[in-house]
Length: 77
Image (cartoon, rainbow, N blue to C red; front, side, top):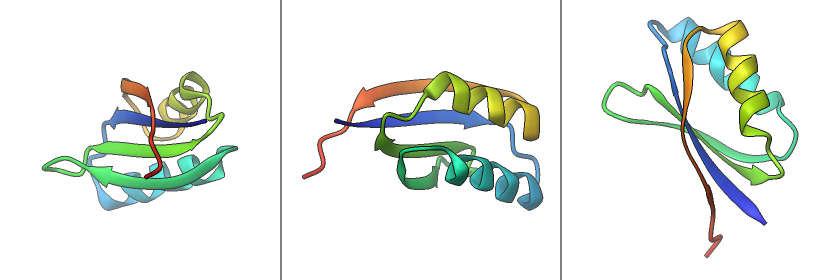
């Protein structure tokens, strides 16, 4: 079952944004990733079996402050 994870990441520049997307893209089970929000500060991840806590931890190590906004089942219609 797919899930949708929304993370708020403190991305101050385009380099930080690029690094955050690289970290998410390397995670196991990711089918889609994108940016949301007025300042593109939210990372949206859709995938099967993605570990939200592990993903947030890796983002904190590489980019900076990260918080999990939501984790929900995703209907793929």
